[in-house]
Image 1 (cartoon, rainbow, N blue to C red):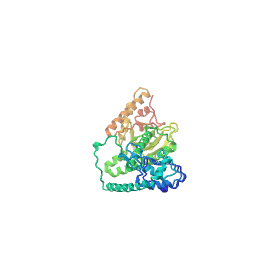
Image 2 (image 1 turned 90 degrees about the horizontal axis):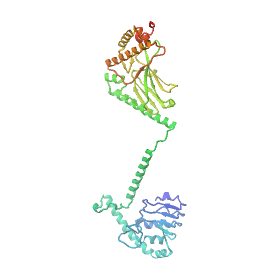
Image 3 (image 1 turned 180 degrees about the vertical axis):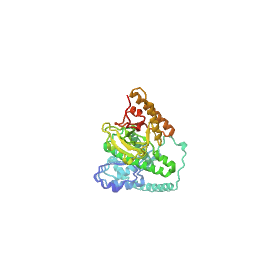
Image 4 (image 1 turned 60 degrees about the vertical axis):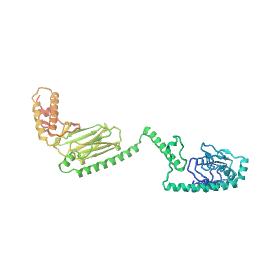
Length: 437
């Protein structure tokens, strides 16, 4: 009880401080309107009883007081309040009479009405009760000093645990009370946390999603930069060049389970193509929740706090790359020009430094396709199948195979495969004559 905190409540009429660690009543002498005070199960002992009653005497309107369960009260081990002497009784038997004699306006003590005859008898016994209280207070102070010295020296009383029953009560002291209170608080907090975790999460608003997305982008970009710096410092020579060509130490992931695919597009009269990556994101997803970071060897896309990181099959020019949304479907489209014009993407993978071999094989396929009397559709299918088998053989020969699905996209103004096969020049001969019918 802090006097500095209680002096402001001068008009307070009811104060409940039950089940606390109050060892002395203080700071309430200025509460003139206090009518009821509950101090049940606290630690007011006989050595602090006189000072506590002095504080209570300043409350002129106090009519009801509860001190049950305090060490100063005469309470037997079975919990009954009694005024008779007993060996099983703790506290002071004259405590009730002393309080009744000192607090003349008090009408109820521990829920029991104070009758006029009880008050007259208590007033007559007040001098004797006061002297007894002083003796008990001195004895209690000495015992407390001995206990304090024992605690300082870490002296613990030896107790035979065999004779302690399983339902024996714990020691009634402030330390035990504090531990019980903390344990109850932690149990209650754990229960509330468990209940909150079992409840369905509240739907996030647009601002919450944007904040979450911004934090994710910041953390992912920092992690990627740190990982690149760490890999570049550890890898040297040929190993560094090989890992850098394949994306370094970047780990592929697709947290949002978004579908994506690659396509290759060639401009008219140009041999160098453009790698296009399309990501199937929801049509009505806000573009503010999409963040794209294109690097020469990999792409990092964050869609609504979900990371999609993919190693590219060919090296691209990141400074000339473009990210855009398709209006019809809402898909994300990344247009990335290739660094090496002669680097070709074939079937399910890509092959380096095999362009001449690929052109020679394409011409051979074109010659095999000419001279047949089948329709143009059948010719085109056969040529396509031969090119796919050729691509697989080239990938096996080079030892470079990519697990990503690469689809070659024909430009709108490109000629049919049958015409390319029949002219004997493969994919590079776009100006050849049409096939003879």
